[in-house]
Length: 346
Image 1 (tube, rainbow, N blue to C red):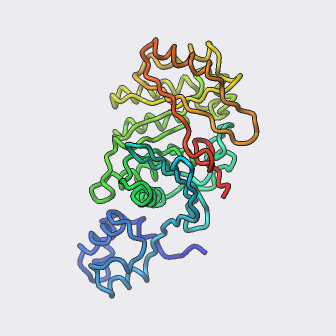
Image 2: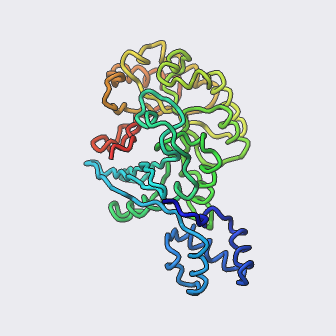
Image 3: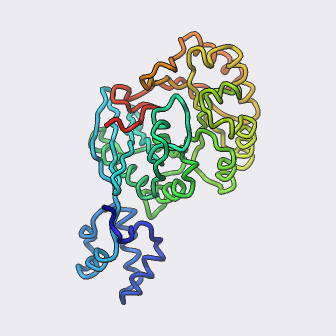
């Protein structure tokens, strides 16, 4: 049962200050509580040790902290960790810790299910049940940071909004979560270490540019041919490549930061020279880089990884046109933690 008390992390610092004044306490108590919630990431009023028992009792009577719980944890042979994250209302999302020699990356979810309908992605089959709140996204990062220290002996270094959901369809809450993650009053992470990955919502990409965000942008592209992209990502009928391309040009004009295109090559879908040439042409107007991503099957066989010759053709033509390209190998496939596999099978 969901509590009727207000979630205290839905309040701004100023609103917390006003609450304490309203109960005859000092306004600076709001600052102290805010620090406990966001900088120290506590989930229990009793842990606020520099606040009197009477004050903590007032907080307990008026508020809750709707924190997440890591319901189950799976470890991959390659060191990847997948969390099944239980929310306060019983919904479950998944988040992933991806380790390499030099860094650890948190892959976090922004929605329960997904607003879009990419055919190759397991999450899209769940449909969107609700958006995550800023604190629920924040908590995923805190949990993965602790796991990074515990299991890999290093602090969390990077964050990707690449888990369950379309981040730009939860725009306000996603940006608020990034604000708290990067804030001096929060986790103090550099926005340069954060990447938001979108399937491509042109209007919201322009809004990111207008809002002068400092984090990185990645676009799940997968084809630069409109008909092909509609086949694999049906929502692209509404969000066309032409509109997407225009929004990315707008992004670059405003931010002067290149975009990353995420691109899976599938057998008999986008593995021809025509597909490669279309991608090269799409990339020419704005500085960018390409991540060629290994495909992770979701059991139905409709999509199959292209052979190495097709990948080599992409690499050869992109490099010939001086477009940076890397091949990203999947991590955590044995626990369904790789890109496109998050579907709450647990």
